[in-house]
Image (cartoon, each protein chain N blue to C red):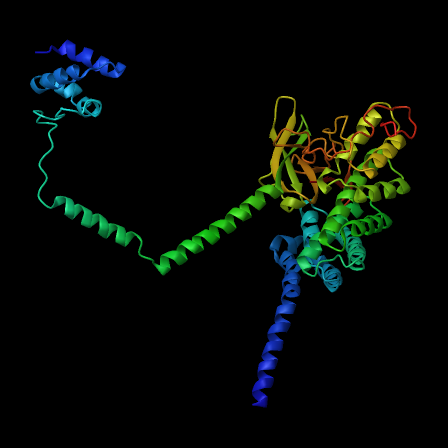
Length: 281
Length: 207
């Protein structure tokens, strides 16, 4: 009788361990499957061992090695030499771990390996776009403060950081300006999808003669004050995706109207180049 | 004897609502004797009869319109048959009910799925001014960096290439244009670029 109980317990433990190991086992297949393709093996087989070593580090962080196989696919499509890829993959892994750490300490990284990997990949794109670690920390902290510990907080931080990355590229923001800008965006009442509208506001302000600094101050003041005052100036123009148009004929996919855009800042009432909110307050 | 042209007048009067019981009687009498008018206007007789039912036998003398006498007991047979059919119609079938429930659940699920899909996807047009290019592809993390099926088309004579791609909202994407099959470039109209780590750069897009 006792033996039967032990046997059943052993079976149950085996099944449980199998189920727990299954995601990791499936994850491990991504990289192996990529290298198993003849064309990839022929061109990049020489770096398979190094890639696998990096993948082991990624998996140890509860992330999927699909992060690496996707980068390898990009490299292969771009016909990048194998020796260049290893260096890049190593830097990628460093970024993945950095992002993962930032998420973990805030309990924001999903338990599901694939979901966690997708999240880490999204944030890592912003790191590669020039977002610094302290900007990431600041935006995550602000988002958690606003929304609590939930995936939506990461989405909000990503939204704010992507706008910041675009603003930095366009207007050469300093790190201090970026930090303030990101934090204000996260804490604002703007929806994630409407955050891009502030880029149009900055653009409008500058187009009317305002300086970049004044535009930034005006927009941040407006955003931080909420959305009680509706837009006076246009905000339908695009800044970070000007070549993109959606099906509805808008100039970009981001702006779908709705009146949540505090684009009154920089709408042309004040272009004295000073710290002018453009609203007389 | 009413002439055929008088029948036309009666029909016009009926259409105008000025027909009299006398007109009706003339009309009926004429159709009894005139086969041509009976073929043309016989179908109107029952309609006219609704307005002039009193003292009129709408079908008297009209062989083609006269009802045949019903066989004895036919009405009872018909009512009995209707009763049987109704009885069968409402028989409860567990299998049928289960199948209907399954179809409903699956249909509802699919409906919600596609509704969600539609609400989470936005069509984005990517464009590039490249008058000298012979081909332009779009490659990004959304299509595993494969330009296959993502070839831009010339939008006009000015050398602008375009493609519309459905993408999921709420995500950050990175992409390149591939010009003439070998030249990977970032979108020149998008200031936000990222270092691709391979010596090039890609364009950043958040939806």
